[in-house]
Length: 186
Image (spheres, rainbow, N blue to C red):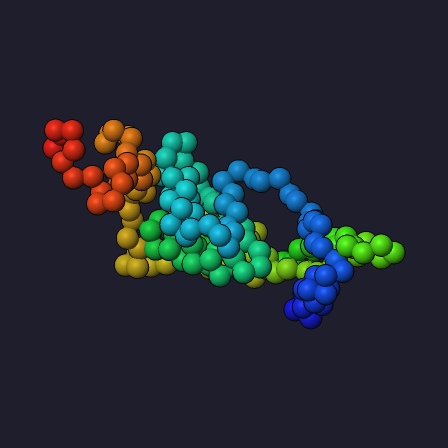
């Protein structure tokens, strides 16, 4: 794990190798699946999942998937969703995924190097009507009590009724957020 990553970094620092590619077994995305990354924003994942639950055609489940450092972000998204959508059952599974880093030599006479490492993954399924199999899963959690849930509609992500001025009507006029330009009052 960490020792192998340190060795790979040391190899690159020596200037003898360069990371050419990272390979992993890629599965096709399922319906209502949210792949959470370290770079993505929590609120975007929450908004998308709320749209899946509330918009036509509404779904009864959403699957959150994350790997590596994004695992904690997936847990945060799940906890917020459970507090915004009533009656969500949670089924959590932990797995690992094999990644292969391929290094190419920068000097003549050296061979290509492949380094295998394993990354932790989490799959969280949030569902309104779990199967009996899901209810007996080791990672099953019952819904939160109704007193802990504040049902909300997802926010509109693009305010086209404001002339298409961007996220929630902000932007489009530089610093200061607009003001009273071009004779229109809002």
